View 1 (tube, rainbow, N blue to C red):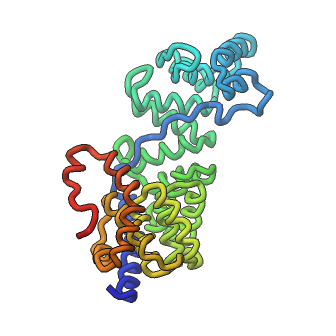
View 2 (spheres, rainbow, N blue to C red):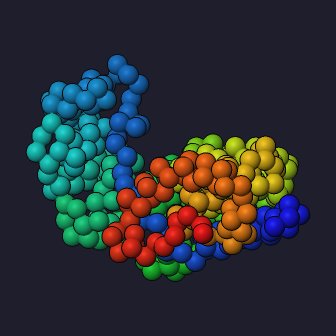
View 3 (tube, rainbow, N blue to C red):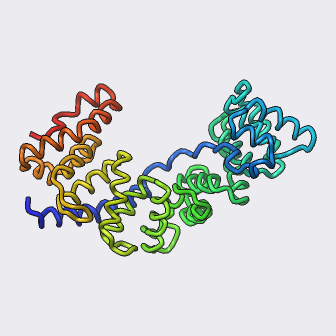
Length: 341
């Protein structure tokens, strides 16, 4: 295959992948609600709360004692949330969902947004009581109003899902924006797809690219792939093939098969990276093992010098072995001919 033919293929595939990934974001089932982060993530400053200080140092029994004391003396709301976390995770005490839910409920009733979110997740998953998605949604809404990023993100997912509420992309986008502005990388990526397709917001490729860039900096692998493609094509952002290679390499090393495939193509062309047939073949073989096949690259590998192909196969082998190790025996049996003939 000639370099010009591969170049044409790359541009078509890259642009197509960008559109396809955005479409997939509209149609695939939304991810499950995120688990509650430890309340220590929004704990008081070090030294201002002995209960949280002990929690952050892993001294859970001390944290339990200090939190109990602060509740008895000051009716401290943050300590109630902390006790809920300790009971929920069984840290320093016996795990008890019922007691966790009760402490979360008491703190939520007093306006603690972390407790609201934690209790929402309990209600969503049926922990510490019956599963109640309506109650979970109410708690998520209350926490989101108080600026809780994960609550806003999870509530947005419910509006995208369209089961508990009528599907509403505009409302989902509003909630995603709250979470995105608070630094939630998942929300930044999701809102970027809205701007790319004009779902719930006016189509704006520049805003989409900015959000993808922010999520990519936060090491969201999907955002790294799409931001890399946007940089390569100059879609909503200044064209920069070297920067595209950087982001695609990061995602490839995280195991993203799409990024691995795009990186292989870049190495065949010397676009954004120095042309390197061994690296091209290596990433192609890894991507194929991960489920991303490419007939043009198959042909490229078949026509390589035997010594270059052997070097690529040796470099790819540890990755392919790791991929196969994660597969079921049935899937491994169906994987025929990882090395091209």
